[in-house]
Image 1: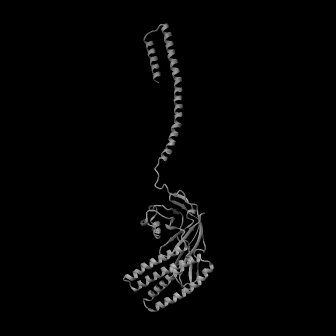
Image 2: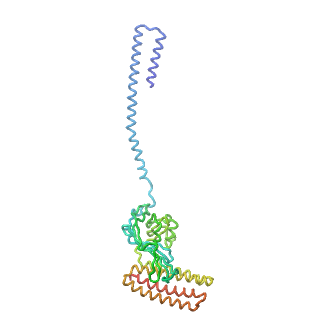
Length: 379
C-alpha cells in the first residue's frame, strides 16, 4: 500500500508540474512515456497483492491444524498429571461370587426378629424372615404368634459406584407362602409376611471391606452397631455390608456363618436383655405392676430366642429327626406349663402371681433353648 501511495504521489507531482509549465513535443512524449511506465508499475503491483494475500492465507491454514491438534492433546497431558486418589489400591472389581460363601443378617439385636440372606454367584438369593409375639394368643394358638416368610429371588448385575461401592436392584422375587395369609400349627399361629429388610427396595448398595465409616449414613451405622460394628473398633468396614437405600435398612455380612452361630447370637441377645431387665428388678424401686411387666419382657426374650432356634432346627434337620424332636418338644411344653402353674399357685389370685409365673417360665425356656441349640452343633 505504501508503494501505491508513492506512485500516485509521483504521478500527481508530474501532472502538477505539467500544468505549471508548457511542454515541448519531446517533453510531452517523455512525460507520456513516464506516465505509461507508472501505470504499468501500478498495474503490476495490483496483480501481485492478491497473490501475496493468497500465500499468507495458505500459510495460516497450514499452521492452524497443527495448532488445533496441539490444543486437543493438552487435556490428555493434564489428565495424566492428575494426583492419585486416596482410594487407589482398593479392589478393582466385585462380583457376587465374592460373597457366595457368606450370610447377611438384618436384625434388631434383641433376639426378637431377624432376616437372613444368602447370595449365589449368579446373583440369585434366598433367605427367611422370623419374628414372634408369644403374648399374642387366642383359640387354637395358646403358644403365641410367629411372623415368618421364606423367600428367593435374583439381583441384577452389580454396577460400580466407586472403588468400594457397587449398586444393583431386585430383578425378581417370590415367597414360599402368600404374603398376608396365616395358619395354625403346633398351637402357634403363623402369619406369613414379606421379607423385612428387602421391602420398599429400589437400589441396594454393597459396601466392600475397607469402606470408610464416614461414607455410610447414620442409619446404616446404627444397624451395623447391632453387630458391634462401629467407630469405636476402627474407622473402616472389616466386612461386606448390604444397604437397602430407600428405607435405609442395613445387613452385615459374615463369612461362613452357620445355623449354630446364628442360634448362639440369638441366645446371647436374650441373655443381654435378661441381664439388663433383671438388674432393674433387683435394684430399682418398682411397684408390683412394673415388676410383673419387666418379668414378662424377660420371659418373652427367651421365648423369642427359643422359637428362632426352633425355626433353624426345622430348616436344618432331616424330616425324621425333626418329627422325633417335635414330639419331644410337645411333651416339654406340657411339662413347662404345669410347672409354671405350680409356681404361681403360691400367690394364686394375688398381684405377685404373674411375677412368679413369668420367672419360672423364663427359667425353663432359657434351659430348653440351650438344649435345642445343640441340635445345630456340627460337633
